[in-house]
Length: 443
Image (tube, rainbow, N blue to C red; front, side, top):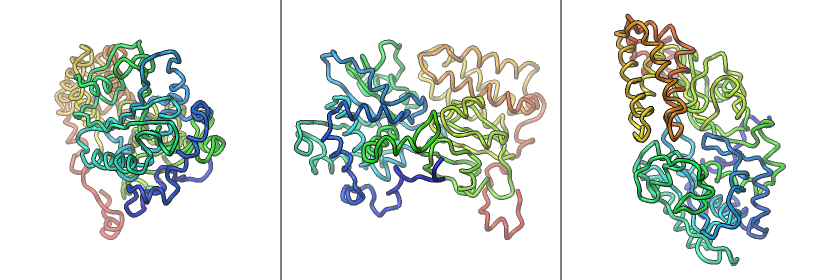
């Protein structure tokens, strides 16, 4: 690991009006695009592949390898779709990136489109974040006016159109094939694969789908070189990335650091867990990949570390919960979210998530019956791996993970309500460190 923090994507977030084109250019913005357009498109794709940039949307699949799956002999146009349907609980890095510096993403879109032979790119943004949609639309208008988009970009023969599309607000549309259905005007539901999007994606044409942070990282790689990028991070996970700390943290927020930093190091930067409390459990990559405990503070936060510990890096949504939190209540709230967001296409997910909510509500109220905890696990086993997309897997994973680490709390739900064991006002009460220190408060 190099420096503790490596602001690259977030380097200009503190600038005044950082989202404006003139301010982005003042920091060297679009210089990477000029550098890229002076090289063959294949060379740009080769640099991204050589950098070992892995997808920052959750799966961690190498971006350059994904681009290479595009067929060479397909007569249809190639499309690039940027996934900004950020909606998993605790995941909050792509929307701040677009809000603070939309031209960072836009420059990445133009370079990536050039590399894969795309002449029409789409940015799919969750509909509820209207302010972010408007900011991205304004950035696109600025780029057209400056000659970075449209016909003959910067005097070359490369043309590119960019469309900003507002989704209707469905977690399922974060899944790439459901996103494509939504983009085409259909109900957002996952498609059967194969065919994969690289062969038959948007409008049945070859399509690259990447996360916002993945595409936004491309200009830095082109500007600074492959060796610069690979000098950061760990052996399996190169480069820097955005980690999102939330929950019972003194100073929550975004922390851009080399891949492989630990939660202990990030908590040091964030002022630790709220005053007078200790870490109980946390999510390394969002709830869909399960929780870890305080025993895992030194797990490297790359694509191998959390996986070896029984979870996953996912979207790097580091939600931290202290000892006042009921594992049963937290699990119930997560599963309620997945039940609500299930598109209903697959019976195990649609029906199984509903039954999980009923069982968890019973256990949270202290009205559980003998065998309910094992029934929870049995339901989770029957949901996982039996749906078109990973939503069902995430639902099952959070249940199995919580029971694994806190089974005694679930068993207590046979006779005692969770709110008696863990008074909810203690979980939600917030104390600023300075105020708490002055008053001597510890709760």
